Amino acid sequence: MDIHEYQAKELLKRFGVQVPRGGIAYSPEQAVYRASELSGDKWVVKAQIHSGARGKAGGVRICANEKEIAEAAQWMLGRVLVTHQTGPQGKLVSRLYVEEATKIAQEIYLAFVMDRKEERVVVVASGQGGMEIEEISANEPESIIRSVVDPAVGMQAFQAREIAFSLGLDAALIPQAVKTITGCYRMMEDTDANMVEINPLVVTQSGEIMALDAKVSFDDNALFRRPEIMEMRDKSQEDTRETFASDRGLNYIGLDGQIGCIVNGAGLAMATLDMIKMAGGEPANFLDVGGGASPERVLMSFQAVLNDPDVEAILVNIFAGINRCDWIAEGVIRAVRELDLKLPIVVRLSGTNVEEGRKLIAESGLPILTAETLAEAAEKAVVAWKAATLKEAV
Ligand code: GDP
Ligand code: MN
Image 1: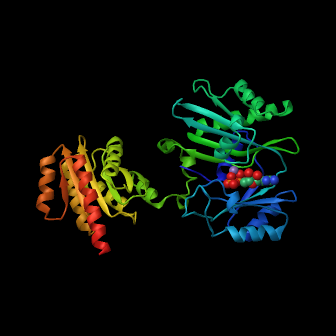
Image 2: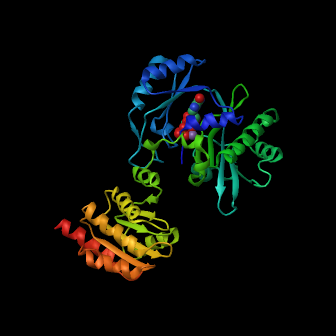
Image 3: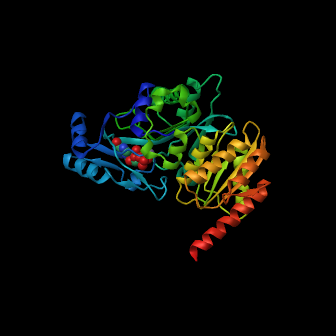
């Protein structure tokens, strides 16, 4: 789960990381009022969307007076901002963050990410902040510092000092940098975050270290024990297909193809995506219905898959161990009837109660295609999808 910049800064502040003073605004008038509550002679108006690279898209404006603040706010609010991280559909701006502007002396890149190969948190830092990390690694690869954190002891002061010195920071700034680096790590650990990116972390002209931007994501599987983090969720920023599914406990990830998939088990779901591709099709989603799926759950899975307007055929692939093929079949039949499905559906059932399941489908009299193996199911789904789209074209 992602959160907004202002929420991330609020959390970081609690862990001793310095951030500029700021306030949230939902209207131009409120933005002006927020600025009046802050000191300074310049303010930054920032669109709050779940994306970085807002600056280049016009979502970050430095303003020198009330008029400029109101204009920036007017321009941003209600706008669908397209950055090179949002995809072409963009993200709607419905809140702004207004901050005291900071006078920057140096920009630093600082991130904490899960490295799957190391199976540890790795700190990635560079003295060349301000650019995206992809640009830094393309333009200034030798400036990038990597430091692996030992989970048993966490981020130690000596390790943070080493990172700070490698960034070329002045000796006078080292204590503040250590506080910032250890603070970020503690925040990550204490909130089950799996990514913290501060870009830029700046040295101000008055010699302070401050996080000017903050991007944090959390481990979805740990949210149950972080109610305070869960409350920061902003569904309006998420893929609506994924929100629908996750609200119902379905493990769903939206993809770009046309063949919707309903599968049990993450591994089998991945294999199903591969088989569809090998058969010449493109999967529309990953969906793991899980074990012991009731007919209602199967019906819900169909709804989740059909929320994607690109879906033109559906493949159900169940290898039932804990699941029961007859329940799955019942769910499929209910989905076809209750949702009045017209698009081609291929069902492959195997395992527990498979005979009962197949019988239910055969006796339903519905035009549901069946297959014995995964390869056959993928083939049939792709053929049926192509036939259906051809028919539509004619
Ligand atoms: P992003 O584009 O979504 O990553 O948004 P950022 O919060 O990183 O802002 C983009 C850029 O605007 C930063 O890299 C800074 O260079 C600049 N910026 C943001 N806040 C300030 C500020 O208070 N003072 C100055 N001088 N520049 C700022
Ligand atoms: Mn940034």
